[in-house]
Image 1 (cartoon, rainbow, N blue to C red):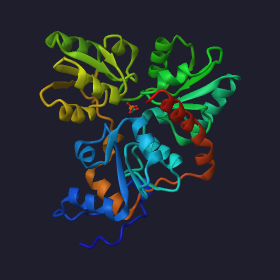
Image 2 (cartoon, helix red, strand yellow; image 1 turned 180 degrees about the vertical axis):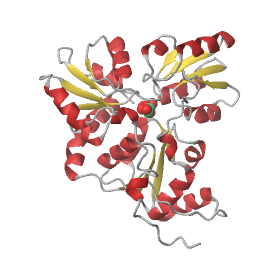
Image 3 (cartoon, helix red, strand yellow; image 1 turned 30 degrees about the vertical axis):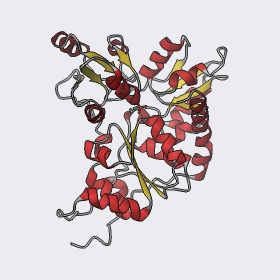
Image 4 (cartoon, protein in one colour; image 1 turned 90 degrees about the vertical axis):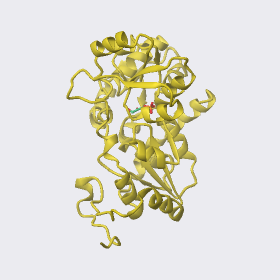
Amino acid sequence: MAFDAAPTEDLLERGYLDVDIDPRLDLFEEIEKLKKEKNAIILAHYYQEPDIQDIADYVGDSLGLSQKAAWTDADVIVFAGVHFMAETAKILNPTRKVLLPDLKAGCSLADSCPAPVFRKFKEQYPGHIVVSYISCTAELKTLTDICCTSTNAVHIIESIPEDQPIIFAPDINLGKYLQQKTGRQMVLWHGTCQVHELFSHEQIVKLKQRHPDAHLIAHPECEPHILEMADFIGSTTALLNYTVESDAQVFIVATESGIIHQMRKHSPHKTFIPAPPDNISACNECPHMKRNTLEKLYVCMKYELPEIVLPDWIIEQGRACIDRMLEISARAGL
Ligand code: 13P
């Protein structure tokens, strides 16, 4: 089989290059070779499949990944995550080539807030500043004053003068959590993450009865009735750190289950139970994150496709809100 030319006709429709891979190849070795050859860095979110996390140069949460993307001197950034994360990397480091193994790795939160609709919504609230969770499109970032991630969201809201009204988009659950943590009332956009809104209160109560010493740890994208039961709430990195530092031996994990790979690596003797969704046919894996596979990662590095390409105006106007977030984070030591 020859691998010297990749068919690109269906790339946009399919989301990735459909290339046969020689089954004798050791993809880990091949990817390592491609990294050196192309001066490429692989950045992976904790929700990626274990093989991708293991081959990545950096595995982290949305804030850590943005910081790495902004500071790297690699020529090629291979972003193993979802589309908005790769777009953010491109905005932050536009002279680099940014690759995403599958262009269709989207995000229900980002999709819930189309920029043209949000623009009209924003017009109803003159004098408000817009804080957007980083899980939004690049176009929405052009309508945003300050971005935030789950790691820095409380610091970002607290950095805004108390008499300044705020619109928070697109995650309503994170928005409600921030209102409660900071005491600030905000105008909330009604978006949700399809994974975090599915956890079952009833099933978690049953699990806690079976494991009375287990700690329930939850991402703030979860619904309020799940967060109310949680022993600890935090970003993916904060949840991981909590499992390392806590004396508890058993954890019920209410976020996408990919993070459990890192939790097990850091604490092999502890037990991690994915929080159950409310419907047996549902699952706490993000179907978008899981569109990326080791095979697609290899092909995308080999052919340097699919590439994230953004219009100049999006890069220019989308950048300020991310820069503000990074400045506030740096001041807070994050
Ligand atoms: P963090 O990476 O900030 O923990 O958030 C996860 C996420 O936003 C995916 O929905």
